[in-house]
Image: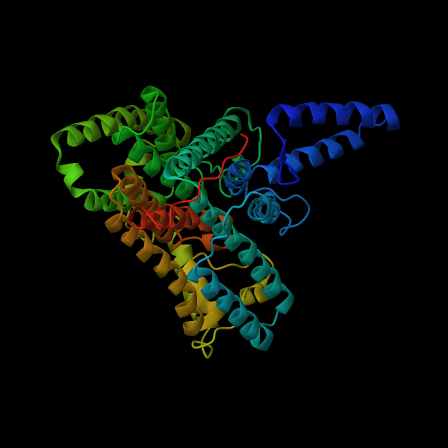
Length: 468
């Protein structure tokens, strides 16, 4: 199919071309090595020629942060974002899409420029600083990519949110499969996400350092519940099953930050949907939903933990020490935080330079996003960086107040709640360096931003038709 002189591939065409390339490449070279490379080229051409598919691919790849292709920078999530930039260019140039940017992009550029200046002056490991700044810049581009969803109407945006939930379910299933295989016979499947793989399983039969995995699963569960409770999905039984899977994955993550963050996110949803939650039908539906999810999951998880660990009441003990900062990894984290604060003394205003903590070793890190930014960029850098996030959150709140569409209001609230969940969880992990966080914020900006068009009939949302 031709579109403005540009080839747009259909799925059937892509499949036929891929098969033809494989056969022809082998017939010419008698070597299968060239075949997959050529096939990948056709698949990439298909991706960048269909922007919606590109968005799905980027969303999926952002969760594969535990995989490296060749180097820490050349990860699947980074490669997918760079690919999507090419897709945006073609989308805007040949399909008459509109390029959306925001004030947050400009503010982030200022933050990177400032970080470079500070790092060049103070960082004892400047090469590591540059590496870190490249990583967070690529991750932030995930926000720019998702911001282009403003070219589509709300139903298209809602479809991508459902894909988001589906991906979280698939990652949860893989994590639980990895966990089970390791517990049964010691098989190590490896993790697709940080903290998800079998190597994270402790002798007590739980995951450890699974903050990112737990936070992602919790956000998926928040979105899933929002869709279920407000009847925004077909095949309700399947979505109930998805909720149960996500809840089990959340508990198995053994991550208090994700548990508490999930509770806070639910509270935010209740506050912003106060009238809906006061509706007797909604109250009953929510009670039934949580009962169907929590009761069987709790029984399964409690028995599993007690059996594997040999300790009766292990799960209950985790709940009873939920806010005890000295239990689990709490003591280690407090010690690490104090060390970081001691290290930044004398550089409180400007910071010591991005990734400067690496002077103590390549594996040295600060497991708190807020302290991470403060240590590396000081008070000035904190103001710039958190101004980006604060601005996004404010736009989310405005989107909730502005929109007259009930479904849009619900999804903006769920995305805003998910963002708060991430921000709480990042007290215990520097997740801001990964694209999945910025992609979520980009989704929030896109859905909340389009609420303005409801009040601006002279500037309608662009609806771009693509071959799917």
